[in-house]
Length: 102
Image 1 (tube, rainbow, N blue to C red):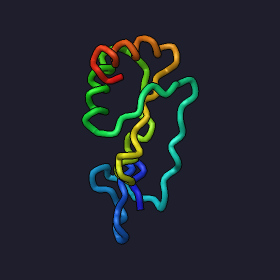
Image 2 (image 1 turned 90 degrees about the vertical axis):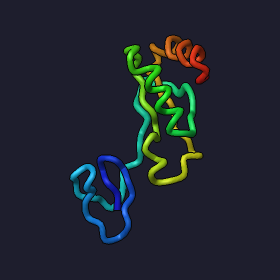
Image 3 (image 1 turned 120 degrees about the vertical axis):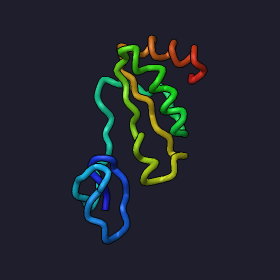
Image 4 (image 1 turned 135 degrees about the horizontal axis):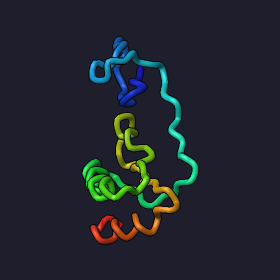
């Protein structure tokens, strides 16, 4: 059973995610990548995800992490893919290079 909101996996017998206050579902839909975004980097730790978010959030750059919640279901070595809207690519690359993330 899975929470459709936070995507956490639950043992058999649980019917509700108390954190999100929603009913659990049998399976989750596969995450799909948004159109118009390019893969800029893959990160493997929650710390790296948080650092990149703190670097990009105040810039107005349109981005998301594909697979960010997947570590709740599988080990994080699969990584989370940083997806940036194509027209923000150069600006995002410059920021990530300046902070040592790329």
